Image (cartoon, rainbow, N blue to C red; front, side, top):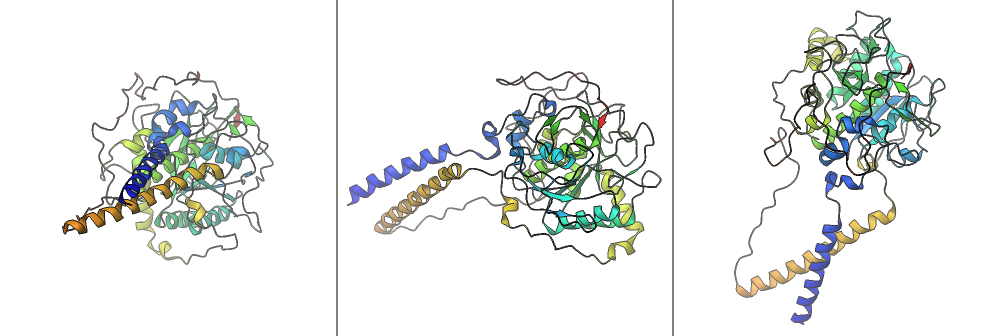
Length: 462
């Protein structure tokens, strides 16, 4: 009997080891992730495949896309679009229809830039592990407020506003109702990202919600990290991100590579924020924004400017560099001043809209997988559990025979508290800078296209 049991245990152990080695090792298993289209130059520019996805794919994060809605039926967004809401007056949509009648599907394009799965046209997002919470809005400030409250109520960690609504102010002001909602959402743990606007070379009006204190306001840059000529010139601009000739798939399922704007810059920056939130879930919105701002690379003229803020976003640095708690954070400095000057506005009664369907535990799930892809982890888990149980039983019997005490093994695990760890020599650091200061790209992998040359904007703005 003992011989049979030992043979069985050996077989189970072998199966357990084989099953465990067959499982992917978290985000580092980037080889299983989809390959981007050749036109997605920001993947090479940001080193997404080679370095970023080894740190984070956005798993476990929900990004609310407040826009024209999202066509959830596209294969590029298969399994990642949750039931959402509608912030328009009298709106009743669940957000999974794109109502854009002026462009090719603005909300769908932004969602694909963040979370594209590689189906259909092959469009891939920079954070394919996230879920998208679509919220339909229009050009009224109360629509923005409703969207923010809906995102809070449905447990989003990031809100992207690739919409820039004109405001009448001095360039730094924000409508009171929107500012209150922004402050409220930040207190509830949400990072808000917004495009700065596309008329910087003409009227250059301040835009909502980018002009609000506490919002990560994103200007557009090209693939030479130079500011887009139409990007807003405002003191509220926080950072810059790719926005020139940044293509995406529209609601009709067609890929369009001839569009430029701070909308795309905002969506890609929101994807970068989601990557950080996934890797560092304990960080507050203030700390996340501080990390993004203090790991940028200077863009354009030396030092901060009113088109790209502190500089161009570098996701791999945001994920791996040490950022001290004393690092500058002008975006939240503005929020602190507003709160200090308007204490009475922090006590305003808040109401929420619960008419849209609640979102269940699926908000924490990753990209949808086929049932067959789930069988291996489940089967492996079962084999491991059985093997561990048998091993523990035999060990217990043996220890009891020897009349010795059972050893106590302390497991070190669970969520880490406190600031993110420092990264020593064991973790690859930033690559040496080029002459212009931007990190060099890794050599192209098999089948990867060379980095394209910059093409001037076509005039079609987003």
